Length: 117
Image (cartoon, rainbow, N blue to C red; front, side, top):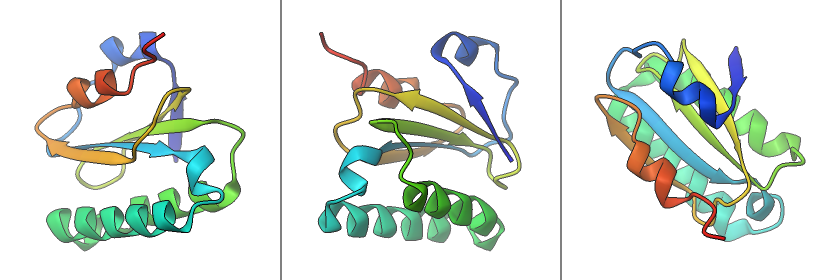
């Protein structure tokens, strides 16, 4: 089960078991753009290929999020290698779906999608 967090919670998150998945999703685009849907589906397959089948429950959760058509423009999903510890961060400025698998949360990926206003 995922935990909803905000930006100020990021610094207080416990260490996650590496590798850590940081995944940005443009939910607005996913609701209508078939190319974006295919792109995200391929990203999820790549994550599954890199991590292994133990990540399948997380992939299923993300697919459910995509189909739920949430009222947010974007979301960042942060998860440990087994998908047992999962956090969702609501975003207002995700332009491009992207992911990283690193030893810790990829803050550069988070910052690259920060609101530029």
